[in-house]
Image (cartoon, rainbow, N blue to C red; front, side, top):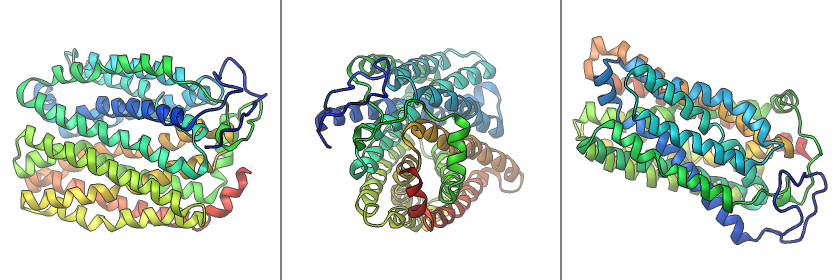
Length: 439
């Protein structure tokens, strides 16, 4: 990182802690580490629900469709809609404080989920978890873009993104143990409470940097309006295809994350703690390895050839889809697990390219809003529609194939991911031209 002093006259002292100081690479890495831990808790609190679909369904007499709504749209709808105004706030306000407030809310509401006495109460608690988590990634993406220059940005975003897989893995590991020996209520309380401590660490140890610090650029005094930001982005052909492709690949990813636990239980008859151990390791380690490798791939290829920096990780991800089909169709438990592991690694190689190119295609004071728009689109389709679609298809297929319905519902989600990958390849055709629009 360039350590020259930078003076940002357009940055208000109220929204930055270091207007005229240097940021050391070590401190930038520390901030990235804190944001990584925040994202870990984001996905622990989000993912633990998938471990307990069975017990919650049984206690409240719900269908797969209702559970799909609970783990999908009940969380994702307010998550995505709240993300836009929160990101607008983050493009002009103190991003660190916004993340800390959101972390406090979603952790408290995760604890409250464990105290719900009806399906409706649980759904309301999950809605508020979604609102809190909406304050996480858009401001974090913007902070990372200011702490890390273009040459290191994709890797930094990849490390941050790996928090999703570490958090999901810990949710599976801890949730599997808690499901085996305790009940689902205890799991929400135990896994939600530590986030309140992390919120304090974030608030009092992370500094708010000037806008454009890592690029030695000064942001305009006023941030763009939401309409201006959206208009700027949608007039980019590559950005539109980027959103469409990312949405469908996200649908595949969330479908596997939210229904994978049930798949192994229903199809292969695995015990909860065994599923938790396997999925915890595969999702936590495999997802992280794939994401960080994808970030390194983008940082290596994008400076010389921006188009290759986008299409190369997408091709790697698509190469893993045949393994995904075997994972779902195999009758052997061992073969299914052995194919699931490399499939999940490759499934996430493309992710850093999405976050990095989305930030790079936005102007400085559009970045948090651009991240929120991206997450809005991807989460409506991915986190919202993905689990719901699998639940609906599972109920639809059940009369003819019985318990096997979950297998074929997930296979349909896999097919949509292939379409998403193809759209991302189309995006790479014009990305170099569209990146020049931000200069």
